Image 1: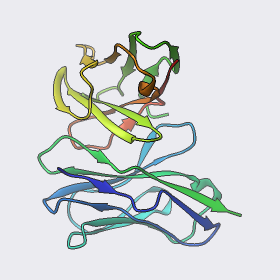
Image 2: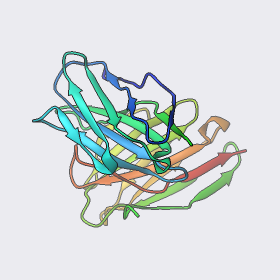
Image 3: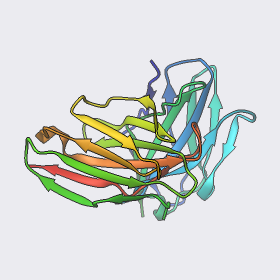
Length: 113
Length: 112
């Protein structure tokens, strides 16, 4: 069965520094990949998604992610973080042909002043 | 505002009781998903409905059930509640199957 691993439960980073949040999935079959963000006391919202095509995906708020099939990874990056990026970030994967989306346990991003 | 509404926002009840959580999807969305979010388990997919029919099932306990009505709103019924059922329950909706999901604000359930 498909599973998602977010290696870091918390990532502290200074404001205006770059950040990478790591995500690996278990199955190498064709997949759809997602990153969602959850701001404090809110529901999740989509940051970006990979369905097919270019392996570099650009999302909202300056985030991007790269799909690496050989590494079964979909790491999220931002070149310069802002205090407003403080949130929990969830990686999610769905096997093509399966309606279920499996979420990782989340990575809490702490922005340090 | 995602366009997905959930009621109630908070619910406090006792062990052994039964509760119903309600979700109204975005206008035009046919798929509704239910998730449970807790500190120890993270975000767990429970069940998905598409246009009134159950489409996919995740880690949903037998004490839990859901349905989607002809007007596309959905209800999640939780019965014989246990302390461990305390969690945030999110509803999400999407147009089709593997589309962007729009999440509601959640219902926080506390079982005492």
